[in-house]
Length: 265
Ligand SMILES: Nc1ncnc2c1ncn2[C@@H]1O[C@H](COP(=O)(O)OP(=O)(O)OP(=O)(O)O)[C@@H](O)[C@H]1O
Figure 1: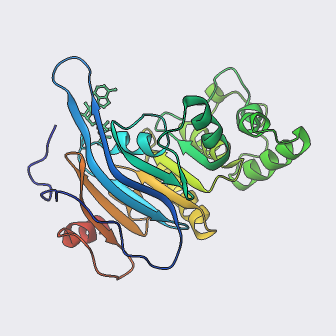
Figure 2 (figure 1 turned 180 degrees about the vertical axis):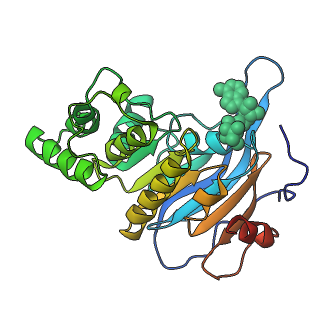
């Protein structure tokens, strides 16, 4: 799908200038084409991206632009056809599935639009599971879970099953699960996409809070309200970065700064 009103994509984005903070995530020349029924979908057509520690980056763009595919590549949920990827200085694009699973468990938390909780496990077990799989001793896993659920307003819900919770509560459980191993990177794919406006505000508030404490976040969203919580907005169009702008008053690098500012209104 395409949106003719979106800014025209530029052929290639050079890495952002070095601001002194080390890059946590770096991608060069990422390409991904999906081969399903019908014509191949050129979802990501050559993306260079550098995300520094502590940044909160929102990736926005029209439906079908390739935002989710990009996020999946960054988290190792899909493999690029070409390009290189580094997380915290380690090159990850050659990792096996098993190695990616370990990497995600320890270093990348992911939240999805539809929460992806394990429906037959309690809230407590959903949150503790990644910690136990990462080898955290049970007592510490329990303590981490208790702290996170209390922080996320879910104390007392430990024994509930996911299906007994509201969408907003389920997304908070998913956030607790994503953060239980203190991953340096949090990826969020339309985390408010199935929530009402109250749930959306709550997700926004929580992402902002964790970011203020230093959490690096890459968020994919259609939602301008959610994107405005970030300190940098990347406009993605037709598989490429069309614009990449900090929202803290530093100059925009692309041509679409007015569009980005409009998102904040
Ligand atoms: N598994 C897949 N198989 C085939 N085509 C796919 C697959 N996943 C995505 N696509 C196609 O790749 C393109 C980019 O999709 P993607 O979901 O990454 O875009 P998006 O910007 O996240 O869209 P949306 O905001 O609607 O979720 C689209 O044309 C989509 O139909």
